[in-house]
Length: 168
Image (cartoon, rainbow, N blue to C red; front, side):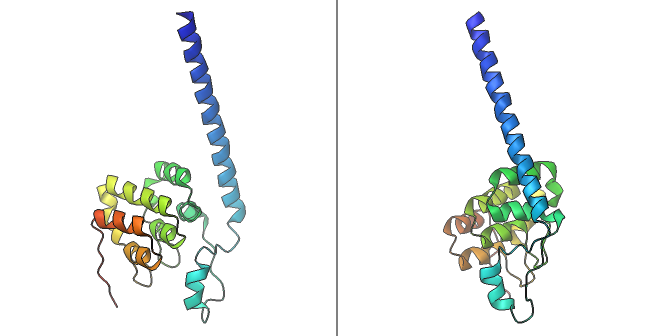
């Protein structure tokens, strides 16, 4: 019996150590986002600046409130889960281009992050309308998957019944 208790205690100790390490990593991630908040966030530079160089010499930095966008752009799936657990009401936040975090993940070609955001949206029916959210350029997440050739994300959006209507 003592052997079973000892093994259980070892398992609990390992689990606590893993949680402690995860929390340290999370704190480092948050600190890096805080340090980077004053720098331009040029995830979109390859695509957006091609169209906007005439009137937007540089992209505006993301605000502190858009941590979900930063996690999506970095492909930080654990960060997305952590953030949505703490702030589920911020899933629909848009940046200065009208992008949701889902738009941002697709634009950054972070398919895993995009799939996590789609699955989260499907689990919360009140957020389902975000699958069809439009950017300032009237692009949906589905449009961006086609532009960036993100087949897996496109399939996931179609399974989720995302609207593919194109508005000119």
